Length: 207
Length: 161
View 1 (cartoon, rainbow over the protein chains, first blue to last red):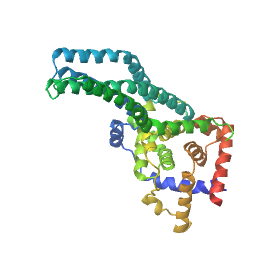
View 2 (cartoon, each protein chain N blue to C red):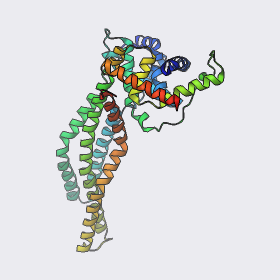
View 3 (spheres, rainbow over the protein chains, first blue to last red):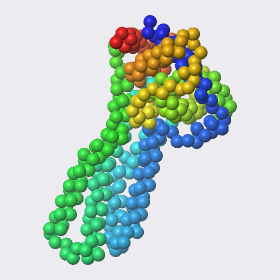
């Protein structure tokens, strides 16, 4: 019987492995202080990082070497654009904060919650990135044009230059769509697939 | 929170954590990482642990949930199996070659199982009842029985191949 064969080997293997692990109070304190590798905590850290980058970006706009009216209009435009994202941001935060408090529950329920949370998160994350990445790119491209014009590297803003800049901005925005999809899929796609497959397997009744 | 109480629970149930790490990770470093992550998650869920629940069930639930949903593990490609030094020196009635063959077969069999199947097999090898397996995994005892049947078929096929 294959499983009975395995039982004995398994017992001996795990007993031997057991000798390598021991947790003392010092070790426990070290483990408690270290970062968790769970996805929700990684997402929460990314979330804080992105908020930080956003704040830094706004500050950089405020102290950039442009005339005050240009800086003011940049900051206020960006702040206005952010208003519709405040609610999803708060929602994100709520979902992640609640999830990171790991409850004691069975595997099926844990997988179900994690898959649902991840799908919800990816839905909003993709949507936000598809809007904010082109906006940031537009700002950089038109800002550069403005700097070149200010520094007189471009003496005249001819229709050709404006059309080329506009073409570049649109191309960039269009390229953002496959890039954002690829990036998000690379980050979490495989993981989501793996968890979904495991959940489906548990939900199969006869196999 | 009582660190000493937690450490005592951990000491008594350390075997469970090691079993989960051995089942889900092929290399030694990954096993250590997973072990620490499980200890961390157990520590965090310790205040919510209801004393009337079985300690072993709580530990298995947290350990299996952590192993299967571990993001870092999912990013790593499964490589060759690293067998720790202790395993090569196991005092066993069989010869060294026989022992190596047994260990090889164990890892080969485990490698063919899905994450959910690994959880079920591990609990079965630990002599848990179908009801207990069902409680930890979150499916019905009947479903556990069906899945065990399929796992046995899979292992039988692997041995004959």
